[in-house]
Image 1 (tube, rainbow, N blue to C red):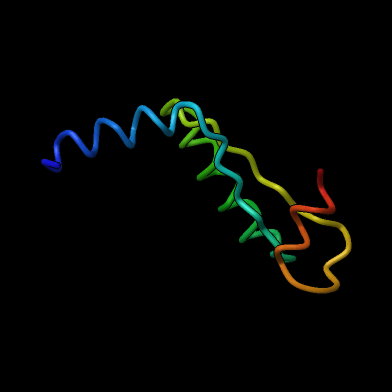
Image 2: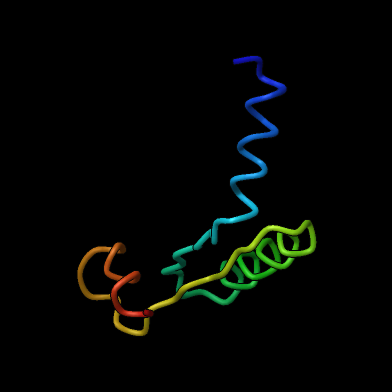
Length: 68
């Protein structure tokens, strides 16, 4: 498939998806940077959200379970 068609298909699929940023950072500078980038992508029309867990025990993938 030509790359131009691939890009169009991927972009159209992203409009239906929710991108989740799992941020386990504890310092304010990094958290602010993540938040700023998420806002930037939202302004571009991307459906994106930041997920942070309060209990950082275990693996980062646990954030998906905790914040739901």
